[in-house]
Image 1 (cartoon, rainbow, N blue to C red):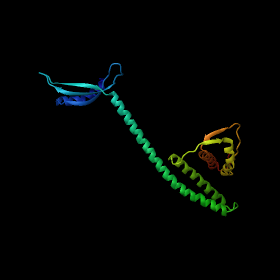
Image 2 (cartoon, rainbow, N blue to C red):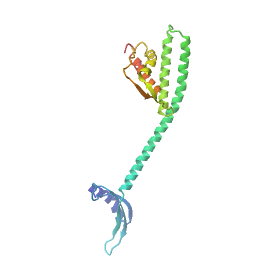
Image 3 (cartoon, rainbow, N blue to C red):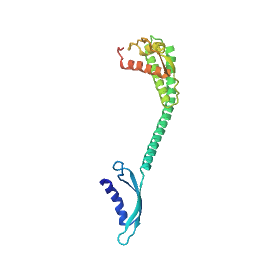
Length: 221
């Protein structure tokens, strides 16, 4: 055995030998022919043997490397399962919070739309109401992301023509950008089509424009 391993086993063995007790299941690392030093891991079982003059031990070593590797794999599997369960619990919590937030944001955006029908654009309060509505819509987008994270919202990928998709939403995005951001859309040549869920893609575009408007309050492009 390596010196440090011999000292460790000695501390276990000497008290047993002093009491002349049989022992079982002492694990030790001992080099084996054709294997790296310190491997495999052995388990020793021994019973007290009495001779005419000197008592001793007779026993057997058993190679338990395969068992230890199996135990380690089982431990890793149990840790992975525990992690998966924790993520599932977080997902359920996120889904519940998302539903509550969505209900609240429905009230915010609904009343904002109602106020906008009653307050003319020339009214100083009109701009503030538009901002409230935009904030409510962004919060609703976050709730959809939480629902997707909790796997309560199923993604529905489909073939989307990139230029047409962006062109149809450019007016909405330009309105969201407001006066502080210069928004332009230029169709790309041979942009082709992609397979994607249109809703998350639209949400990503809205976030980009909204972030630009938030970070560039004066004039930006």
